[in-house]
Image (cartoon, rainbow, N blue to C red; front, side, top):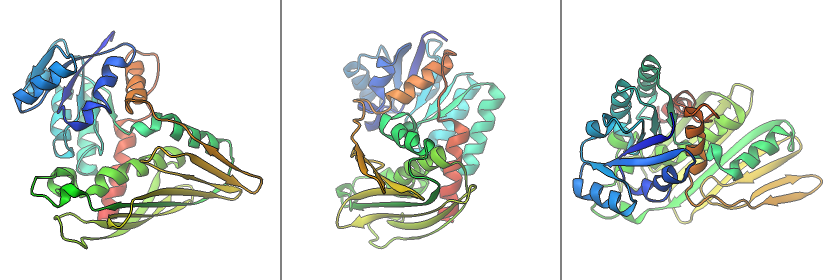
Length: 321
């Protein structure tokens, strides 16, 4: 496939800077079509981003013969529908995260793509960002020894949009799968799979303490990995302050990092403390998109697939259960 000619289904906020321009800037890649149910907004996006085609119907974009790969940037409730349709058209799929509403939907998507013989990728783009690759390098080189425990703590003040009357799909479980936990915790859980392998069991507690919306606003969970590592996490979306801190504790030291803040990675051992300040690219999905393009062209490998992403969904299912 040369070049990879992308179509985007759902050109909302995530595509404005994080992903959309990256399809045009990645080597061997072009963005040639976008779709949004509101045709006026689709046309506006196409004009502003210099995209030659726009649609207000997903099937029209999927079946456009000039489009040979599809990026699904809609909320999770429609990921399965559009993935199955794209697979039927025989085209590779790159879907937003979380992969689907639940693990069962993920399995349907994987099966459909495998049956159609098309690859399925998911937008856990932190697997390709230099700051998170530095953490993997430190772990792989045994800089903190054998890993014993992982601590995850994310607190957010109540988002202003939770308090107004406008619909917010991220706190509607029928659209998002749950609340902000599914949207945000999925990134961290995916990173842990990337670093340490499969999580074999998980359990959690959830509450809706503020009743600002129907989804939970606080979750705590424990995790057990196949290799014996234990983890614990708390995700609080009704807090006084914003805190984003993950700590990986080993026999020789610890690594502290943020999932969402582009703050330095801190390595602490008995000998010294080191700080690694590594900036994110302008378009944060571009490194992962480049890896997808390279795989589709037969020159590389993408680290985030449907199979790897589905592991995050099953862990979230366990915690939410």
